Image (spheres, rainbow, N blue to C red):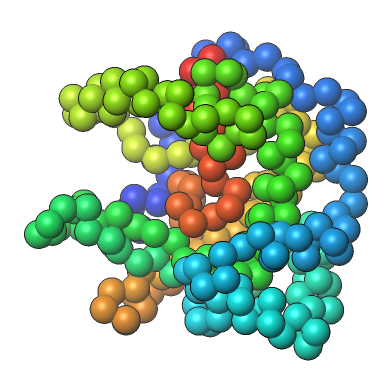
Length: 249
C-alpha cells in the first residue's frame, strides 16, 4: 500500500506558470532524425551496451542470456522491439517491473528507510536503451549547460558544490508534493519542441509500467502506477533531466 500510494498521482498545482519559461529548442531537422525508423542494428547495439548480469527482470534472465542465445531468439526479440519502436505496439507485455528494496540506513524500521530499485525486464530495457541511445545525441541542445549529469561531454563532478547546497535545502524542506507527474513531463517535452510521435513513444514507455514489490523473495500484488520514474530504466536519467530543465527555467 505504501508504494501504491507513492506512485499514485496527486494531481498537484497547475504548472502553467512554470511552462511559460520554457522555449522551444528542438528543430524540425532534429525531430526528423529522432523520428526516423529504428533499425535492427540499433536494437542490437542497445543489447550489446547492457551490463551482462545487471538486475534481471521477473523471468530471471539477465542480458547475457539474450546475448549468448541471440541466434535462437534474436528474430523474435527484434520483431517485438521494432513493433513497439516503429509500429506503435504496446510495451505492457514487457514492462512488468519488480521493485526490490535497499536499506538507506543501518537499521531500517519503516518503508521510508528503503530505496526502491526497479528490476526492469531485459526486453523492455532493450527498447528503452535503443530510444536513449538516439536521444543522448540531442540532450546537449535542450539541456542547459549548468546541468552536467548524463549529457555527453559534461562532467557530473562540475556540480558537486551545487548539488550539496541543493541537498541541504531539500533536507530542510518539510512540505510540498513528492514524485514526478507524467503530465508535467509530457508538457515540458511539448514546450521544448519534441514532435508528438516522439513524445508518444516516450510516454508509452513511461505509462505502460506495472509494479510488484518483492520482499524476501516473495512477490507482492501487481499494481499500476500513475506517476513516477524508475531508477533502473535506461530512459529515466534523460527524463529526470528534462523535468529538472523545466523546473529550472
